[in-house]
Image (cartoon, rainbow, N blue to C red; front, side, top):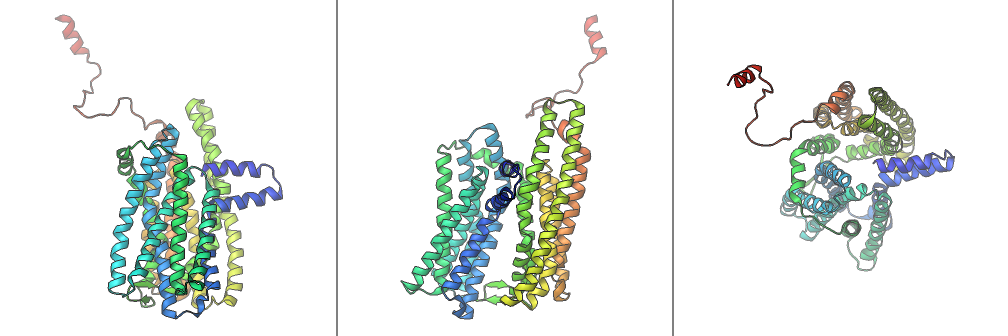
Amino acid sequence: MAGIGVNLKKIFSKNTITTHVYGFAYSMVATIAPMFLVIGAIIVMQLLLGFSKVGYATRELYSCTVLYIFIFALLTAAPFNAVLSKYLSDVIYNETYDDIMACYYFGLGVNIVFSFIWGVPFCIWEHVVGEVPIYYVFTGYCGYMALVLVFYTMLYLSICKDYKKISLFFFIGMSITIILSLIFVYLFSMEVTYSMLLSLTIGFAIIGCLEFALIKSYFRENSGKYREVFQYFKKYWKLILTNFLYILGLYTHNFVFWGTDMRMVVVDTFVCMQPYDMASFIAMFTNISASVLFISRVEMHFHERYRAYSEAVIGGRGMDIQNAKSRMFRQLSEELMNLVRIQFIVSVIIYFLCITLLPYLGFGGLVMKIYPCLAVGYFILFTMYSAIIFQYYYNDLTGALMTSASFWLGTLIGSIFATRLQPIWYGIGLVFGALVGWTVAYFRLRHIEKSVDTHIFCQGSIMKKGHGTKPSNVVYNRYELVKKEER
């Protein structure tokens, strides 16, 4: 993300209204534009194809299929992205670019196997128990695997700082999706919901292929050093658990409510709770600008302070190191506070717009009762994730894992308790989990601030590590030396 910060600094340095608008737009393209393109394509297809006129059961089967594709593609792809990103950063630093394709193929194989383990049993259950046609099940599975490929390959393009091309590929894929859905329905007279699902699957596959082709154009050689990538998985297993628990925590509160009596079961297979799921989506959208703010402010300013401290450690005086450290942590706290202040203003504005306008669009009743508490929870959650990113800066993998684990566990316990409360408090589980995670992250950052000198200067080793008999710890023995002289 530091590459975004460098570009944004150049944009904002001109300090005009136009450049500030352009900088915000650039941040959106780099972070959340793909999500909006997919949502936009789904909405356009529904409007153009008369989705609301389709039978209720058919609509719900399609909606649940798409919901499960997104949730579980993210859950299966996310755990490995952090450790692969770490490996890629080290490869780029060492300029051994031939190792990138080895990392890509190894990581792709791990993702496919992991996704297969979760996806195939569910598809068999969907066909056998739910009696969903095999062609529909297979199309949904292909869409799921295609989205896993898209999420996975985006990691490598992000490392290459090709954020604009990621958004361009999503624009191309979703445009083709809309066109194909119209062709399938009006030219080939296919059923509406299946044509939408098939078009979406093809669109994801096109995006994944375009991303893969671009990566291959950048990195043509493959070193074949797959064992080194595997060693990173063993060494940085905490990164895998941290990412997985964080993403799992994002949906744990939904899963808890899916297990209540308020759930809806579709074809004896899919489970959901529509009011809660819709409230979660709106609440996440209310605070999604935190991602843009984090990129455009925190990364842009803090990365320079962090680099100044690193340069001072390499060749500066003791006084320079202490001054750089003080400025770095002061900048960290300032940017966290700025993120909270600005995001609070943005969230309040969006919140009032939502509670004012959404009832006129058909989103009322139970959805709007659940929404306020969830909006608070996602506000705290995105702030907590910013703290996790700072923990990554200081290689505090244990702290990051503690933060994600406490967030997930707190959300699970709080959501189970929330099912016994009134609807207005249904989101209190997410609020509680995010607060617990943020508290752990805060105290870990304070611990890092106090012990950063130990972490920087006392982690090395004078002797090279190896296997064998441990050498004696006696360096000098005066009596042995006297005996040798007497002989």
